[in-house]
Image (cartoon, rainbow, N blue to C red; front, side, top):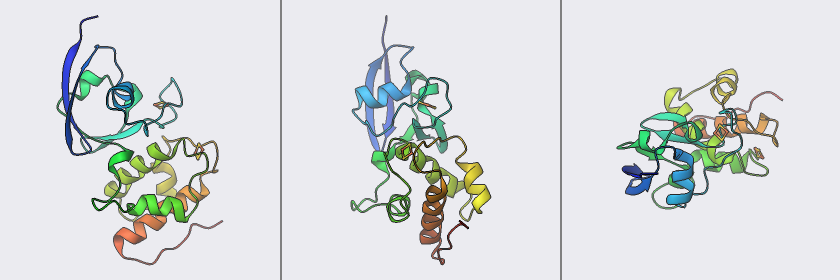
Length: 166
Ligand code: FES
Ligand code: FES
């Protein structure tokens, strides 16, 4: 099949590649760019393990063709750490609050939470749960993910961290 040349910015760097029109963005990210933090957990757009930040939106990259991302600005989990290599508030929060177990949902969860906290810097527990409803986790039961996001929000806002009720 004829291939199309695509260019986009991923984690601050210009990238390019030759893709078939049918190539999913998640496959372009994982296979062409070797950014394998972004995962695939379903074939029905439910799980959100493939979530990336695309032009300021949380997007399930299994449901976008790579050609549709031409010219876009994408951030994946590999671009989430601070410039000096230290963990972002969310990454730190997930570690501190034990918001991950197998780690398979975690890249998508953190990338989604990153956008959620831009959309709503001080979310309630209910708003966090609703805000990550597009991201499934089979391990944690979500409770500690909620705490991790609250931890990160407090750190970013410079406020006191208050855990969700058990
Ligand atoms: S891989 Fe499950 S929503 Fe994309
Ligand atoms: S930590 Fe295993 S699926 Fe979420």
